[in-house]
Image 1 (cartoon, rainbow, N blue to C red):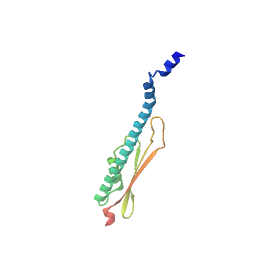
Image 2: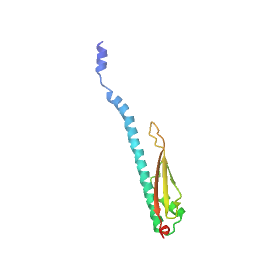
Image 3: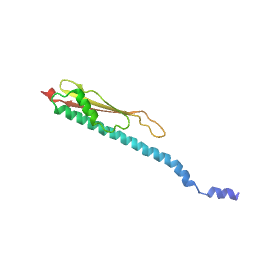
Image 4: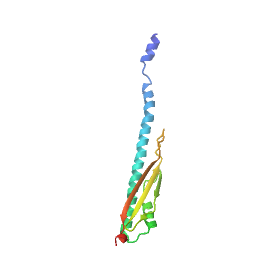
Length: 131
């Protein structure tokens, strides 16, 4: 009976067990923060690319849609994870609509969630349309 009480009071190895429980949770949280950071980077890259496409469309009198699309594709950053799709500019009589879509699987180390899709659109009034 005395040996059982002695074993019950012994706390050797309890720190190792606590660490074995806490480390996977901590690593998953850090990896999740990293993945969300990549989403913010992709969002900033999309915003930058739309700004470059809009600047190019407003500076030149008759910009070609393919040239605007190439400009936006070259200005993208944050291309490491996921897929960017730069749509052809949709034109009407007075403006052009520029669109970029980003899709990535937002998986964590131990579980997955559905894909995340970010879409950014910017309407640009071109000089030729206003003339």
